[in-house]
Image (cartoon, rainbow, N blue to C red; front, side):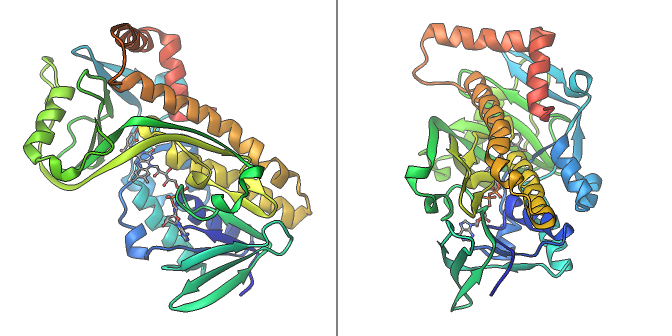
Length: 388
Ligand code: FAD
Ligand code: DHB
């Protein structure tokens, strides 16, 4: 099999890249290890920056997002027994949209298949070859048959645990990494939203977050031990923890309902640089991870492939390699700002078991500063909506 661009991974990065290339007349094949049903049902991120929405709209895949996504003009911070609103739109002129990642995946898969795009689901034993030459290839097994795709470029969009990043020799890349001593317990609940806007809560018992998915589903998270197991948490214990961390005496109450999904995710910051070796390029989680507190993961995947699609278009239309040569540096500039913001939000909002009394006091003072100072609220809002 031969194609122009072989893409490994059908997450937001791989699918959107394939779609953007198609809009420019560039042919790609996407290899995905899981089934279509699985990728369309995996619950992950929920927040889209305005810039990500613009990219999806411009690419013609934003109709359902515009109809079903919820536009949020502000975000709340709860701590010290009070809630404080930061008006994102007043401070930045921009907003965010809550539209679940698996819905983005459903929209992108539909668009690729409608255009005759090739996504090979349930591929196994994916292996990259000759990526340092002008004739790279990818070997894999599909429907029990060993196959090989020859391509001009191989793009690794296969997430943090994929095979693409390890294909870049460690002598050619540097990994920057930080693992956090806590995780997030994530829950989907059948109930009306408790709040029109997201609530990020700092509490001595640990961080908690109220988000939504639809008028009948809430998405809730709370800080937990990353090694804990969901079976250790009865419904009553979860509700007690959430009520304790989120409610105060202002009368606001968290709506309860039936849980229909529970999971624990670990948290890390990670960057691999450069994001290229020869004809192999990395995009999205394959190259970088952020802790979810800044809601940046899916947005970074989208902004990476926007830059990469333009660079590949310049290569095919103008014969220019300038965009490809500059991809890593251009993408990393935005990535490091998002890494910084996600680390800062994580540090400011979570309870660190080993923090000294002094550190706990200055952590609280930082939050007080963020909500009291228009300059600091603006800095948070600009980073949150991705206004750069
Ligand atoms: P992915 O979405 O990971 O897609 C990679 C794809 O590659 C997958 O479909 C995978 O099956 C496939 N793949 C992997 N290996 C191979 C292989 N060898 N061959 C073929 N295919 C392969 N971000 C937030 O901002 N907020 C959140 O609440 C949040 N929650 C998350 C929860 C979880 C459990 C995880 C893992 C991530 C979460 N994120 C969150 C991060 C966000 O979802 C990611 O940043 C985003 O999915 C990145 O998109 P991607 O396309 O780069 O990678
Ligand atoms: C959601 C996830 C996040 O990581 C975040 O910071 C805000 C919202 C969500 O899943 O809705």
